[in-house]
Length: 335
Image 1 (tube, rainbow, N blue to C red):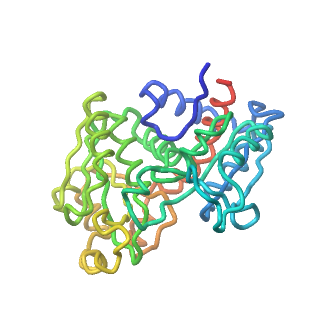
Image 2 (image 1 turned 45 degrees about the vertical axis):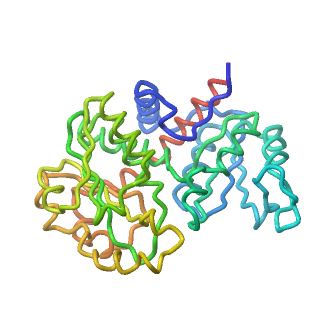
């Protein structure tokens, strides 16, 4: 059997995604097990984490496994990812050695590595996670790079818990203001999973500059076609919110301004009214609200929205623990 990684949900069929969600739901009902007994996972964090690190470490422990946390450049040697390079800079070792050595120590490798935010044509290649997958001889898991597939599963599980079948539900993925330009990873992933689940997805953003990378828009169209949903783009707040079953908020930087954030700042600052508030949620069809967290209150969403019964962000965050178990257990079982 060829080596299977978990880098993006686009590599997984709808049936495989449904199976992972069912597996995660089972772990939620019965949290402990021995699926990782005697197994280990290396968790490499090139960027900060709270929910991801906690849920992966605890998930491995709950299933009888052991997690080792590494922060390259801090408590581990800096790593070079470029091929055929003269290593006369900061990096002390190459990914070709790192991935192969770790593969001899552990049974799974999980990686969190954000874009550099300088050149989207470079960042969109997702070089770090792809290099691990290329050189590792054990399964590699994406803990967030330019997509966040584990967050996708936790989000989908929370929605299924609330609605059951998601086909045909109106889903609004809305951009929100943030004082800093942020990664598009969660927005890319929300678009992928919502269309894969057959929902009628509206991408709501201030201007065409904030439309996501064409690759994810094309994937979204394909997913919608295959699963009975739809994908539209809107810049009209009231039109997008009206009748929505789900509102998912995320801030992200405009790709045409990648690396030129001062030029983008006036556009971002002019659209602070995209905040999710009570008036907008009142336009929905008794819709639920969620966010991947962390969330800046009264910047992305108001206190009233976050503290309302319609907010399922905490449920989604809890589900990270269960879906991570499902992913790790399934990869171990396939080996």
